[in-house]
Length: 162
Image (cartoon, rainbow, N blue to C red; front, side, top):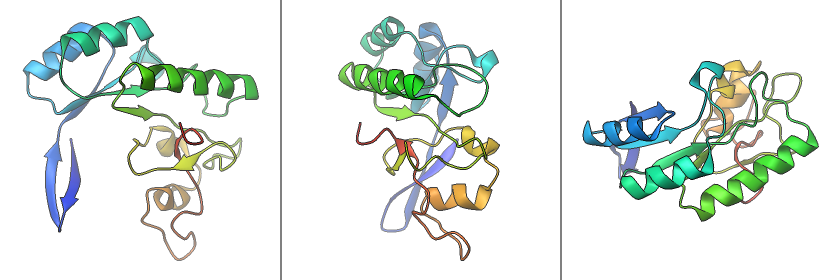
């Protein structure tokens, strides 16, 4: 559950559930969830789901579905080839109607990777923030900033305009 700003100082409670099956998405919608984060392999912390499963879930429900883009388990440091594949997955899921893309990219030092990430409040933060070595830096990504790390220093959550 999270609170979102609806403008003019008003907030609203949102129920978002991380799920890995079509049946679970249907059940979450029936149970009153406001949106879901769709992934595969929750035991690995969530990986990119199968596009066909997303399309069926989208066709069977009206709930907004955010899609996790994560090509493998382990750390959040990706090679150039992995990043290229991630960008292709983003393109395909957006074309298929994903509400938002959820991902995270860190440097080997555990900081938000500025080279590959760009900040956009419309996208979702990812659990990689919990693994980042500089949490102050991560919170600045979310726009809050701090004296030691001004807002916008690090960038996160959209893949270079995708």
